[in-house]
Length: 164
Image 1 (cartoon, rainbow, N blue to C red):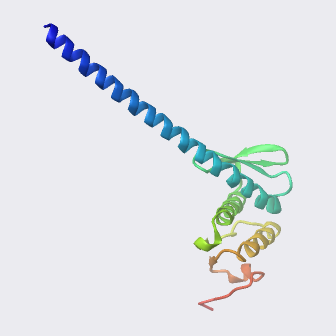
Image 2 (spheres, one colour):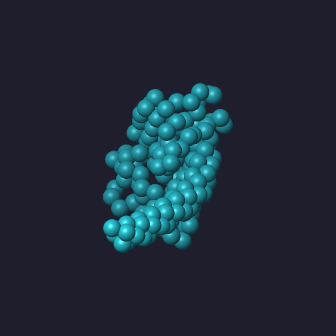
Image 3 (tube, helix red, strand yellow):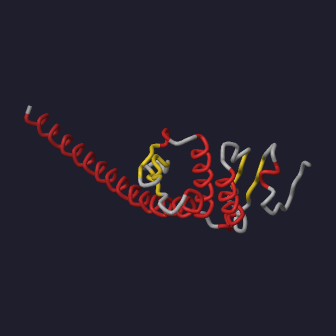
């Protein structure tokens, strides 16, 4: 029995050491992943807010969760959850997020912004403000507009209009 106990102790010790090494590796990888995630989150949030202030006003701010999803927007000092926003505000903020994402990517990588019948639920004032930001973004990134209402985008310089 002493031999069996001795072998079991050695095997248990080896398994424990491997488990501790695996846990250390896991914890290290998770820590580094989280640090990298935080490095993305801050500039992403900052760019959304910079572009969003041009559309929504100076006090505009957002809260972005760990999955890089906007969960709240500040309006006139009050925080509103995504579900509390109007359809137009969701549409506008979604476009701001797409523009912010494109701004954070190196223009040499060629990330396009695709608008598919965007701004349907937006009022004229916010549409004009958003289109100004789209025009600014189009200087460094390709913007593809798919729409059944091309007059909505008359203020943008178009390089190629395939169907008219």
